[in-house]
Length: 343
Image 1 (cartoon, rainbow, N blue to C red):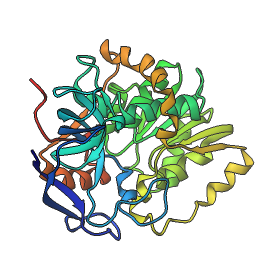
Image 2 (cartoon, rainbow, N blue to C red):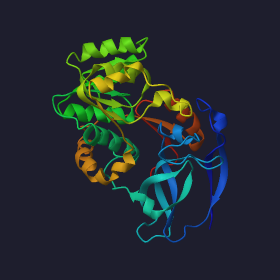
Image 3 (tube, one colour):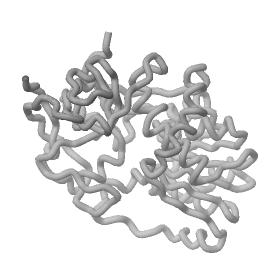
Image 4 (cartoon, helix red, strand yellow):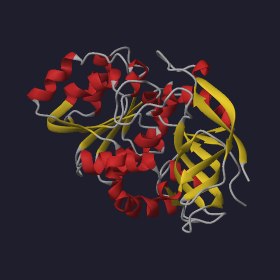
């Protein structure tokens, strides 16, 4: 028997900030799962900044979403019908799925959630792709060391908040950068930053750079880059010789993906201070997921890691929630609750 459901497709490509006109909610019908497939009921859906790049036709590390094709996201879902012996109805899995209320996906492309290990939504946040991204950038890309000073941009976001906490636990001096006094207070009180600077209160990069200098008089050894823009321009002059920059994202520039901005003049500092800058995409590092989980999952279970979630309810709410994410309106991980957790 077929499954009637709804999905959100890419209706048009945005020229700048995405708007409601770029999305379309439509009904669709899913067939029964064939061999190696599972039909799932989506429970939680993750919204992440990288999705803005996939709405563009510009060449990137993954193909763009085609017009009239469904958007996709990391999701947690319950199996309702299975054509694969490795999964049975009632199993809860996570993986990449369409923006939809139900999905038909290859069984090999999802992973079973460990029952009771953490709240289901955590597998899209602190124990999922954002958490793995934070751990990878800090340890494998930046090779952060105890006693060093790190600046973490978007320090209250899903990635930045965990990067800050892991850096603090490693024995680093942690300087966060976030948007607004409330987020900065949270970065210090909950996420382990010694200091957090409000980039919105700084009128320009020079002012923010002076604030970084005051917070890190001995310079910055590691920069965990999530935003680009003014913050990047402010941090680079404060980097120490042989400093490392882990480039995770550049959200300040995402809406100009088809016409990227010029490099800031401070880019010369990369040469004079022999900085190492490495961009990374987390799926290149998934072989190290067991190491990440071995470190972070016990901390989550013990309540030693803090995280927050901003939740939008219902598939219909996804486009507005995504647009708010790109504008920094979320507090922590942005999620969409599509259905109820299994009883």
